[in-house]
Length: 382
Length: 230
Image (cartoon, rainbow over all chains, first blue to last red; front, side):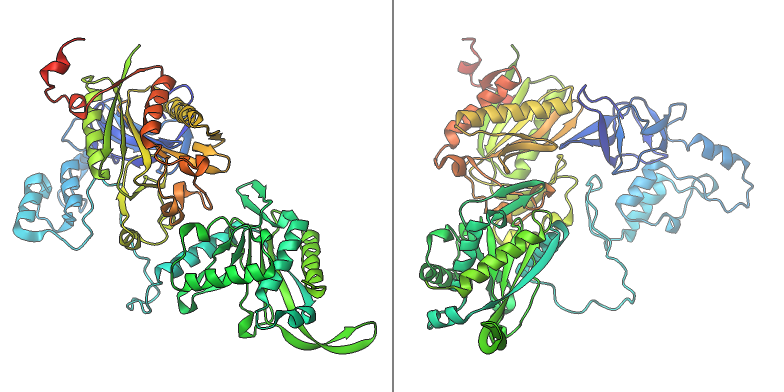
């Protein structure tokens, strides 16, 4: 690993430009090294044949570590000394194929020629440059594989062979589903998910709501609780936690089979439940007609999801990164509950399920927060 | 004091900018030109550094192209990023001896130019680039051959930041970007900021900047008037 300046202590091998057995001229690029966003071409210190590559692509090594060896006693155009030594001892009937020059190998690689198919006219049937060029002229070039420039470091990924070789069935995911898939997977990989659940009596909200849905009431209660417990109104990026004063409330909106989008009610703490209801309705309808502006889906500090209309009782939602918690409102159902000491009454009940990031906070805080949300709901007098 | 030749190119296609840099780099390697800095903007394009992973562009090239954003592969360091109108791109073609020190000096120049705009930007440990708090404002990716650089820096001035949301910029999940406009709420800063960036960049490297035409830089015949010593 060459010294590329006093402040460079190590480097990562990105690409070998030569392979073992290749001939290289002094100052020709032999390898590319990456150091912190800088890719550097490293020239060969001498002419000769690459006899050994000691550090693989992707490995990071300190300055001074030997990357490869070049045999400077070799002669261009001839086989590696060791190979010719072996060749010399071979009997005429030996199956060992004669060595192939780097030039021929490169032409073959470039045109995807299987050299075993080419008839060699050289000494001991060695395939020469003339042979491979003649083979190509006769129309043997294999066009099937993707034609990438030979110097391109990018190779098409080989499809993984499946257990059986049937054609793949099904249809590819839509771009929106792909994006959701990526976000969800990344969130699960990033956050230490944990879900806490409390049960809330919705009687007071039921009385107050008229024709409104439950969501703006629960949102209003959650905002009040977030002001009380700002640690839940936070974003965690890497190891940096930002606790926000303003509540920018994300509301998950289903777009039917297409997917889901989370528009954000900015400065939601300034709104009453009526104000929230109006904003949520507006965002949801514009989300469905795809008229949201970019800033209307950005900058959320807490998210509420509300799939309860379909009758489910409990769920463990996935956090909307980089937020630290997501509150799930499920169905409101009438249940017999114990009230006022030892009586049983029929009450509209719901579960408030909240997934939170155990990296950012602990269970006690999550429970306190949810208890506060429940209190706001059960004592609703707005 | 040695000179830094600065050329303003306006809006240039990514592929054209790469071939121009390659040409100028050969000239710099041969000692035909002094150190140079190209300042320009690109039409919308995602560029993939050598170590970009498939998951960094989750929507697939076809979808991005449907949004009017091209996808290009490059040999620079770093992973995927976005360039577009309103973002100032700087490509230094400079002879260097220390690659890390080069990047650090470039960062200092960008930070000084942002400070001129009243933006308190800085670096973050282990994360190359220029940051305002938790948000990234300037990205860096460089390629060095025979001691001469190409590629360089990109600073968000008043470009649309939405395209960054559709990828995993620099391979950092959850990364958020910002711009001169987002930080200052001032529009139309590009002309002014471009001059500041060139001045501060030259200053950071201890070079004297000299504005030249691209023809001059490419060694094309220059009109007689310009070749008369002042």
